[in-house]
Length: 207
Image (cartoon, rainbow, N blue to C red):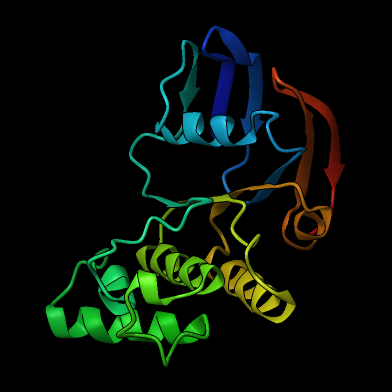
């Protein structure tokens, strides 16, 4: 059984962003929410994850699952190095945490940047460090909100492949306004419009 969204509604400043949305999501695979900026994609993602409370309606199938969320903003701890930021989400001994954090940072191309603080890193480097943290944490459901927007072509390709391998057999919810990303990663793409958010179409990608 996957995640069920039933008659979900959410307003900000009196304006509806979600208005009676219902949707069934599978147990595994990658589902993409594709649409223009401001249509409500991020709000939908946060409501599914429980980071935003619905005004009405329900989301079921999430409780009890381990959730890994990669935000548009890197949300790195500014007082911690890249390695410390990733190690902070790992539940093991200090030596093992540091070693695993180094491995994940190496996997995203930051092997030489373990000791750098966020202020010393470019926007793309910070995004990759945040991705390494989400990958290291793992989970049953991955929430990816515009995860590749600050990356150049080669780094984007490598990171997409990392997520593909790490999330195999899990459910991944991807938000993007880049159709190339959607088609490369997702088995199902919901084409959205709004606000309020509406499903304008569905693409099955056969991944």
